[in-house]
Amino acid sequence: MFDEIWPHGLRVLFVGAVATEPSPTLEFHHLHPRDRFWELLDLGGITKGRVITKEERKAMADGHARGNITDPVRQIFLEKKRNQLVRLGIGITYLNRSPGIGTEKDKAALPAAEDLTRFVARAEATAPRCFAFVMDNAMFKELWRPRCADATDVLGKQPFTIAGVPVWLMGSAQAVLKGDALLAQEDQFFALGEYLGSLADDT
Image 1 (cartoon, rainbow, N blue to C red):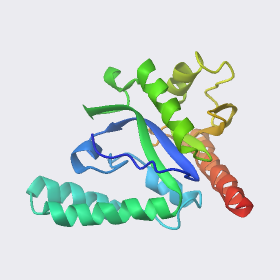
Image 2: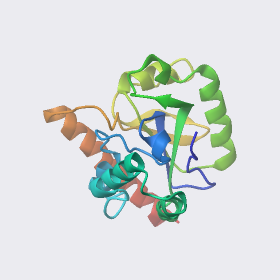
Image 3: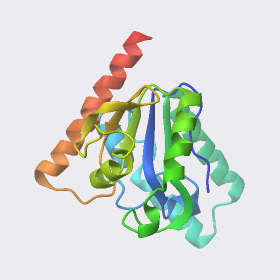
Image 4: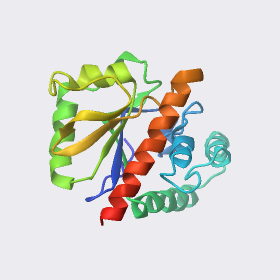
């Protein structure tokens, strides 16, 4: 499994259920062709511009398929992107660290109880200021309701914390959303961006 981005003291840690292909193959986050993660961060003002553009995503996939991107060049590019995120106080991880899962809908994508236990222990040790779960709403509720009775499947800031850290549900960045559902997700990324801005003002 490729490296997560989870140093100590992040402004926000984005938490997915599982890294789906081609991310494990290309060794970077949210690279599925249908994944809007980088677009949503830009839209919400969480990043200034897209950390990974559509053109870069396509170039990585095409270069891997042709075998014409050397490993040292790719690693330099990816390290630059990781460092950019860390400077912004943004981290990325996944509850289920199993490789080779095609989509979030696969049965194997559902994190196990031990995945949540490991996540909470790491959260207590690294003290991020906010968790933002980028996953299917129903899956989020199914995972956390046994541990936190207040967990809901409603987008936005949740009425519970994990290791004392505020929790937001952002929905799946791979879901095909239209109309009100699409606007609701985009609104929550705007709201999260404003919240993170208020954290920056407090420091």
